[in-house]
Image (cartoon, rainbow over all chains, first blue to last red; front, top):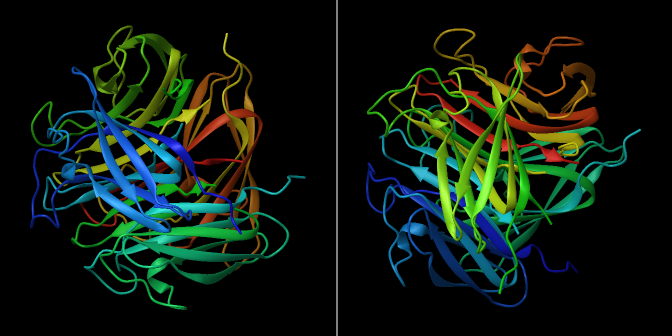
Length: 124
Length: 124
Length: 124
Length: 124
């Protein structure tokens, strides 16, 4: 059997939710997404902290990923303790209680012709 | 001579096959692609497992990459044991019997103006 | 508590500022962006060096990121000691006095239909 | 002073030169690019090998990057020992005699609305 896959701390410096969207909501809403794979056999609890350029970090945002499941979470949908402002640079720090793997995906629908980007998060 | 290149376990948390495509099939079909380089001197057997948000993982999907060859495989074309549903978040875990290097590429043709994204998979 | 997140030296080989932009300035200007997360508890000083294909490197460009803050800096806005030329391949080397995490993002607005790309920088 | 930056062996599994381009040549030609930073104080010699799905690898393609320089090379421009075919999956293995950092960039101009993608190569 495989041992656990991934690591517990991940960072994403390049967050930014576009101001504008085109198309239908929520399918085509511009968004940043956090993609978390928990390939392990226990549920994982994550705590997100959001960093800004000119104010104190906000968090923790709690997240849970069940054993042997993936979750794709839009940063746009994080509302507790506080919704993320649009058109504002941010970074995310993810701390999990068991190893996971984290990928970052953006879909920008500012124009009718959508554009996408993706990268692994940084395993800290 | 070079020793073997890569590692045996790779993870891709951010899979998602768009519902819509434009243009000609299969050339322009929206797809996620798995790109596997086997720079070694023996054939490599891989086993993919696909993880979902709300159901049990599905797999293994068997794959083979001959010695000193690359393979680009569309996730859309994985059908045994079960085709991947469209418009559904998934993750992929790749386990090989010898070291390989894995890159993930997406082409989204939902609009006539295509968009692409790519990242290395996570070497676990 | 977490120990410091990241590392002190980062490299980005693939810099290139497009010649053309469309839309409104500066919102829609084509740009390469450096995204730096300082999750630590002390301010970080960075020194950027820009490498070219056919001339000596230029730098250092000084940058500061306060404790527990992120900064997104457009390479287009680096002017001291010298503004970066458009349509010219370059690389960036970032050296910090404390650990940070660095992501690279490009928005290309050469056409009205924008396109984006992102990757982590290389932790050296 | 910094010690050398990077490593000597890099892999890119996801190469693919689109069949079609739009716009002006060579500025807007669809291309894959290899971006190599040599931050060191000696010239670096690289040898590229190109891997295919159904034929023997081709190479070495020799490349040189002067000390303290970057080079962005289009795979489309590699012609000796043999030009790369269009619309054909390939991988690249880069072996250098001193450490470098390698990033992979694609610009696809199949449609008038261009799209871009980038990732670090895999440091083997």
